[in-house]
Image 1: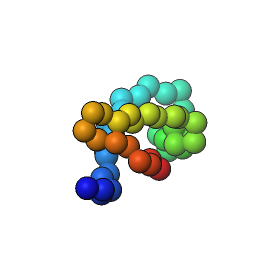
Image 2: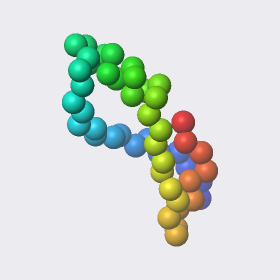
Image 3: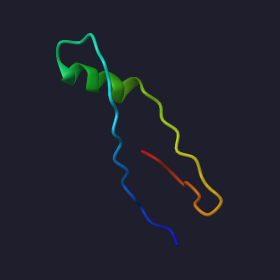
Image 4: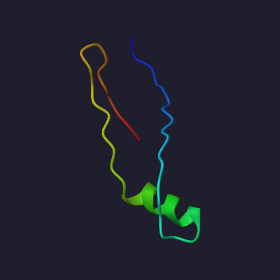
Length: 47
């Protein structure tokens, strides 16, 4: 079976930015994440 799921991540941060929006923008553009396959679930693509 192939399907699409959406994962929600909870991330606790500490930042020197005055605006949380600036911190979020930096994380969205500069952070890399890895979601690996398991024995029974193969990751096909992430966005």
